[in-house]
Image (tube, rainbow, N blue to C red; front, side):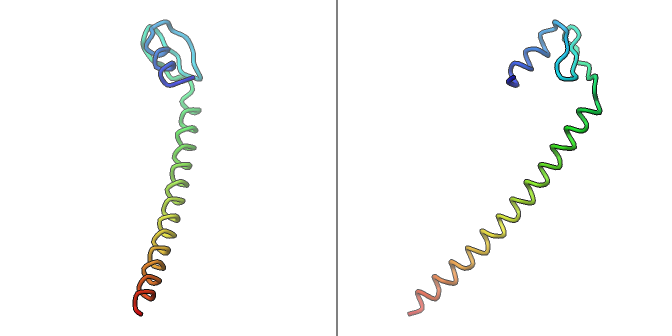
Length: 78
């Protein structure tokens, strides 16, 4: 289900239930806040993991750039 389909469902005002979210004539009632809180926590952990991975890759790029500059300077000294 796309975000557009979910949004259409939520604002349709028809009422119903979709993965812990209930609509009631256009109003949104969250029925399972613990489930949503767990999902948010999971996404936050995944985000932190990805940020650590990005930082590690940035350090590797920096090391490779320093090596490249060192090699270029050695090559051009002649």
